[in-house]
Length: 110
Image 1: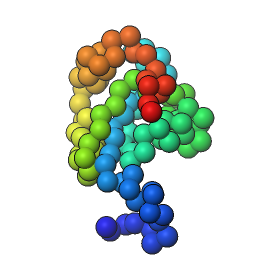
Image 2 (image 1 turned 30 degrees about the horizontal axis):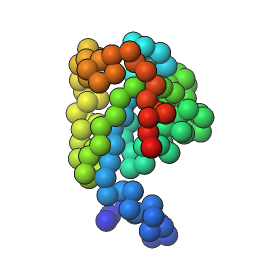
Image 3 (image 1 turned 180 degrees about the horizontal axis):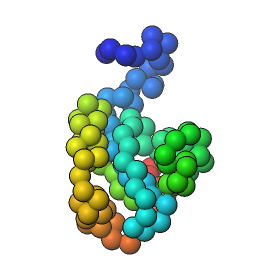
């Protein structure tokens, strides 16, 4: 696979077989951030703890309100790219259909 660091560990490689897209926010109907990852629990933990500088840290986006699983990271990246071009109302509808109370779904990750 192009772009992989040669020193990547076998267990890290296994998590790259699939992918997740997710949406985090700071409050119901607040600012939204759409991301993609191969390890959803780890990535959401990074958002919650503010470990990565950037948009989500600057706006305090720590609440996981939506996620989808894909068989390949490539499929997840394509979905994320598409969703980032959607109007905000479409993103909000997606969240409301799965999570009408905008609950933080982090604790439901196993």
